[in-house]
Length: 293
Image (tube, rainbow, N blue to C red; front, side, top):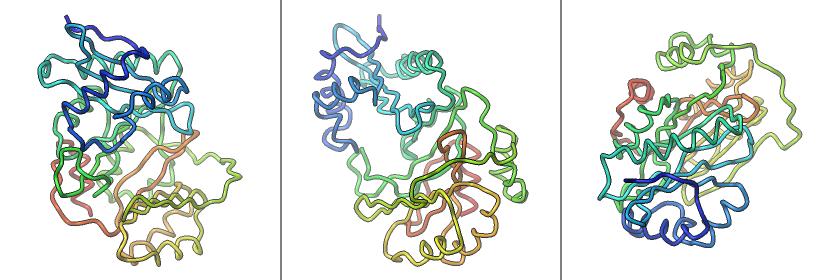
C-alpha cells in the first residue's frame, strides 16, 4: 500500500533521489537536488512538502510553495516514480496538501503546468484548476530538450475570487468571458502599495516586469525595452488598464491571460519576444488564449 504523509527531515535525501530518477540533471529548480535546502525551505515555512512511501522508499512528492501572499500558495514539484504511475499518487499527494491549505484558510492555489507534459495538465483538470494564463518560453525544458518550455498557469479559488469589473469592457475576448463566467466580477477595491510601482528582474534572456501602478509614462518605458529580450509583463488590473493596453500592443506585446496577485487582486499578462510554436494544450480556455495571440 502506498502511504501519503507529511515531510520529515530524513526524507530529503530520498526526494533528491526521486527527482534524479525522473528528471536526471534537468529539473529547473536546483534546490531540489540539495537535501539541506529541502529541509531549510520546509523548516522556514516556504515549502510544505508531502511524500508518498512504498516499500520504505519515497515514490512521490509535492509541495505547497508560499510566496509573499500568506493567503495563497502554488502546488509545485509534483513528481511520481515511474514504477507507481497510474495509481493516483499525484492526486492523493495534492489532496493531502489541499487539506493543509483549507486548515490554514488559504484563499487561492495556483499551479504551473508544462505544456509538453499532458499528465500535469490532466492532474490540474482532475483537481479543479482553471487555466487562466500562458507563460510562453518560460523555462528551459526539465526533460533535456533544447527548446524552451511554455507554461500554462492554473488557479483554484478556495474562497470566492472575483475578477475586477472593469474587465467587462473586453466583452469580445472569448477566453476572458469564460473566466468571468467562472469567477464573476466585483468593483475594483483600492489597495495600499508603498513599494516602487515597477519591479524588473532577469533570468537569462527572459525579463520579468511587474507593474503595480501603471501610468502612460511607465507603459511607454516598458514599450521601449530591448526588442531582443523575452519580456514577461504583469500589470495590476485597474480602471486605467484598457486605455494603456493599446500602447503595448503597438509595441508588439500580446495578451496572454491573467494571474492572481496579493490581497485578492489580479494581474493582466502580456509578452513579447517568444518563439512561435504550437504548445500542447488540453484545456479549451488555454487553447482560446493561444488562438488569440
